[in-house]
Length: 130
Ligand SMILES: [Ca+2]
Ligand SMILES: [Ca+2]
Ligand SMILES: [Ca+2]
Image 1 (cartoon, rainbow, N blue to C red):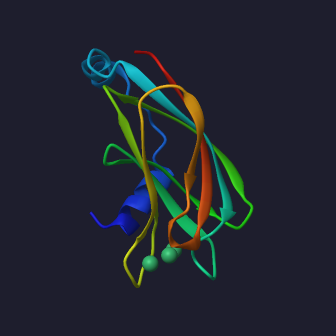
Image 2: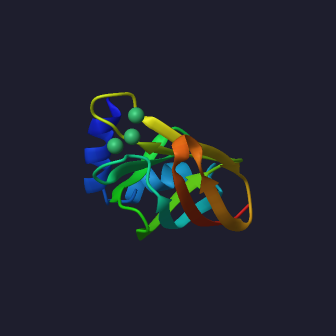
Image 3: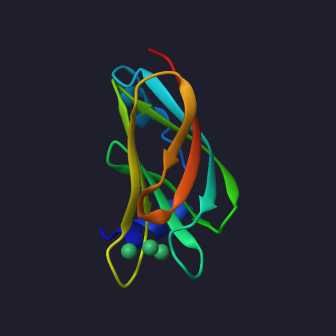
């Protein structure tokens, strides 16, 4: 699937895992990453809004449009086992998508900075469980 398609799918995707799906993953996915706020200090695209997709361990988990200075409460919780690789991608139609940064987190809380391609995003997060 192209990341443009992923962007549109993710921006409409709000249903969490329920029932059997959740039971199957609970045993091995003992930790939870809570992605709280994502702030766009400086966007990557020169015109129009950035289209951001957040990936955790390779899966798209949320997406939204951002303008300079805009902050959004993503409130996204993702289960994982040992570590969570968080990647921020800015989607483009005509040229390749832009990876704005990658961070690996395992515990605790804080703010991740994504600063590639002259962009600047700040993501606050907290990890629970062990
Ligand atoms: Ca771009
Ligand atoms: Ca774009
Ligand atoms: Ca690009």
